[in-house]
Image (tube, rainbow, N blue to C red; front, side, top):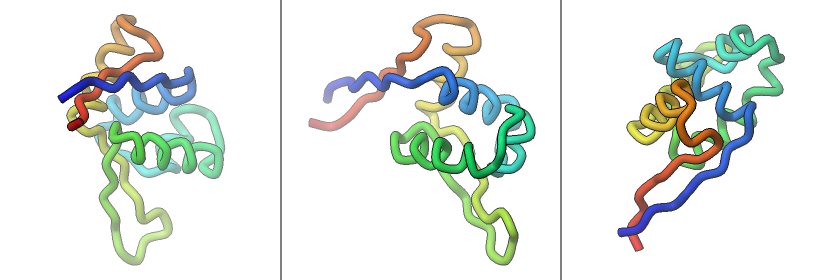
Length: 96
């Protein structure tokens, strides 16, 4: 096993911090907390999901079907960002 380092920009860090504070959130809820448009944050949330820092729960029949939650790695990284250690970097174990 090795570690992969994820480099995230300030907007990504802010999104992770907001999901950490909210616990679970739709793109609209994250957009409201970050004073941005939902269409701006959706692709960023999806990218964080693809990187393994967020997981998605889907609701049927709702206008905003995706609910974003932090993975274990995402929680670890968001907590580090909150206290200011290792800004812009996250370590994630990957199988070789």
